[in-house]
Every structure is written in structure tokens, then in C-alpha cells.
Image 1 (cartoon, protein in one colour):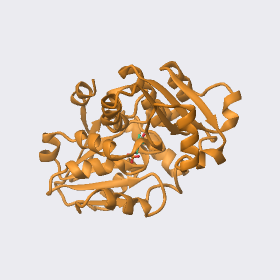
Image 2 (image 1 turned 45 degrees about the vertical axis):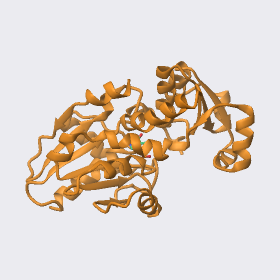
Image 3 (image 1 turned 45 degrees about the horizontal axis):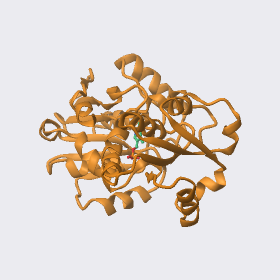
Image 4 (image 1 turned 90 degrees about the horizontal axis):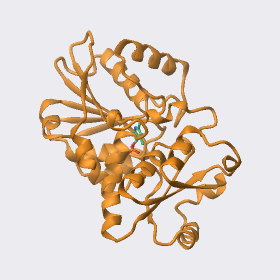
Length: 293
Ligand SMILES: *Cc1c(COP(=O)(O)O)cnc(C)c1O
């Protein structure tokens, strides 16, 4: 299933008046509800669960989480049961937003917890409680990043991708996707990550997962932090979408593209550079509202 998906991804070359070329790898087209990169992150986790003889998964996320949407759908495909521990107790009594409604349609059981409790999501005590409540569930961390996720993200790059491009760009949340891409990249390539969050802790995370050095990450375009926006970013999205007929969302991919276009404008890349941009999807979350974070 996952293998078939990875092979049908389209490439779109941007029509730009620059000395560099920019090609978009459209992982967003894998599925309307599923972030392209999330599929790669989930693949080996589901295979591992199957190997362990488990057919239930449990994971964590916010009300607009692309990871929740993707996990629900993957569970549906694999014939798994799924549980989503969702941040925000108050949501239990409200109509479900499109992300959660779709997750539920794909069979995910939604378990709402308070923001305070959600913060405990990695504490041994809380995990033990969950374990008792949901025995025999394969647990996937928030955002889905673990060694098996990184293994899956190595498959984002094909042999041609490793040969035909000098620079590979991606959006960064936890860094799992970028690490997989770094691990799969060839030595002559540079992997450039655009963080959706403020802070340099992500640099250290990635350094723990890979020993390769052909990468760089910036948070200069995070627009104030996770899920935050600026008028300039929103305006960029509109003009970019009008010009290139390519959808972006404001949490991840727009910040990456905003940053990349800024760097190109500054002549950051040598003339002739061939840049591959990984469109990681996330478009299901475009109905995002102010309640997000
Ligand atoms: C989750 C997500 C990312 C970030 O992936 P990480 O592996 O957590 O860094 C990037 N883009 C989109 C659209 C996402 O949904």
C-alpha cells in the first residue's frame, strides 16, 4: 500500500525568473486528508505493530493535527483500530472540526484530555494509565517521530532525486522528516530545513539522529512560532498560490516556501542550482482557526 503511494508522486517545476531552478515534489497529492510526509513516518510503525501481532494504535495530537488525520487513515487502510488522545477537554462537548470528524469517520476513537494532562503525554505515570485503559495498543508519539519514522522518511527521496538536484528543502516540525531526507541524501547535496517553530533545540535533536553534516536549518521564517502567522506570510501565500497554482498551508509549507523565495531573492544559491522542494502536504489542516494552539 505505502509502496504504491510513494511511486505515484508528481513533480512540478516552478516558472521563475531566476538563475536557479525549483521543482516541487508533490507529496501533498498522496491523499486529500493525509500529509504526504506522515505516511512515510507511519509506514514502518504500522509494519512493526503488525510484526508484534498488534492491531490497535494509539497516538497524540492537537485538534488540527495532520498526524492525527494521517494515523486515522492509515489505521483504516491497515485494518487497525485507532485511538487519538486529543488536547483540549472542552472539545468533547463541541461539534468536531473537519480534522477530527474525518479521523472519527476513519474509525479513530477520540479521547479528549485537558491541556494540563496533555502536557504529561510522555510521563511514565500518564503512559501507564493509558496502557491500562488501552491495553495492547502500539503507541506512536506526538508528531509521529521515532527511529521507524525516520527509516520511512528515507524513502521520500528516489534514486533520481539523489542525482538530479543540488539542494533539497523541507519544512520542519519535530525534525523526523528532515532527518530521513538527510540520511537518504547524497554527499554532494545540501538539505535545507525551514523550521515551523522557534528555537535551536531542533538542531540538537537532528544531530542526535544523524551523523551527516550536509544540512542546515533555519528558524528565520517561523513567523513568531508554531502555527503563528504574520500579515506578510498570509500575503505571500495568496500571491504564491495565484502565481503558481500550488496550494500551501500556513503552518509548515508556506513558511518553507516563503523562506526559500527570500533566500533565492538574496542570491543565496549559486547560479544553476537545482533545488528540490518537498511539499509535505498538511492541506487538510487549512481550515485552521485561532483556537489552534
Ligand atoms: C508534520 C508536518 C511537517 C513536519 O514533519 P516533522 O517530521 O515533524 O518535522 C511538515 N510539513 C507538514 C505539512 C506536516 O504535516
